[in-house]
Length: 192
Length: 154
Image (cartoon, rainbow over all chains, first blue to last red; front, side):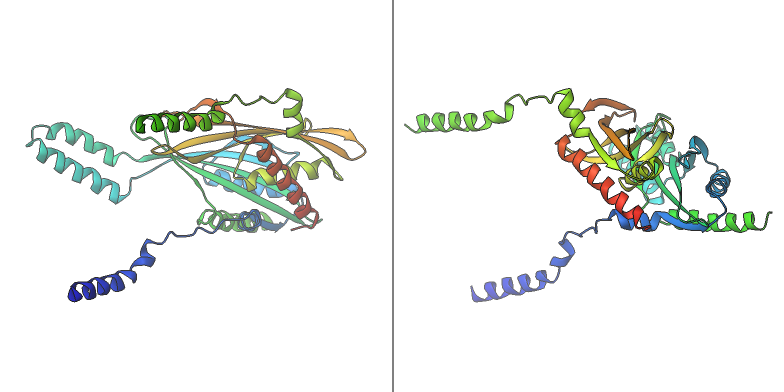
């Protein structure tokens, strides 16, 4: 009995070291100010429309289509549709499923499942929607703020079946956009 | 005796649950307007409209229509929501309108609509927003904060 209790206590002691693995990760809530800090950048331009033109050029470079433009409020909304190949993990999942299902049916339905596999190579349809907001800070400085949503749509039916919606707060998206804006600002200043 | 006790307990349980089936009193159009409207005193209309756009961006909304002269901004947001056995996609739509009352005073009215996306991705049946009073209060408190932040030039 003593042996059993000591073994049990050792097990509990060792298991306790693994407890943090099961702990729920606490997601830090992003405040409105944090979002603004990530989404906003200040540029030295002559007017609001100059910064709007710069943003429009970047959007056109990125193959966005303008769906709403308000010059008085300095607002732009644009949309981009693109395709993205499925990740390797998903493809492996499809092939594993094919092997299992063919095995279960002793190869009888393998032709049907082989047709099913083509889905693994059909890319996801992506829809990116972006809102650009330009406002005046001082006589020489203007503020630009963007926010974007990425939607992944159903690939095989072509219907807009939403799979996920991502709000790009922590991603590279904003950094990439502003790097392009910096380049555009340089081009505008050089009158190229 | 035992069966009788169980029957009494079941009856009592049902009685305690009955308030949840009670018909909730629907708010009148005037009450709804009151909930959706606030008055602000700002220097310019543009300042107020920019603050509204910023609040919507803070709440991850995308602007799909705006008109400065009419003082209208409308936007939408699509997000995941917890549901029975998994998740579902919800779409929040909003339109905000500003009316000038005079003497640098503006009336802001907003309305929010919630819809669930059906399996084809298109917005389905309209759903009521839970606790709308708090929902609108939160929006206007964010607008207050946004106006303060912008007046400080942050």
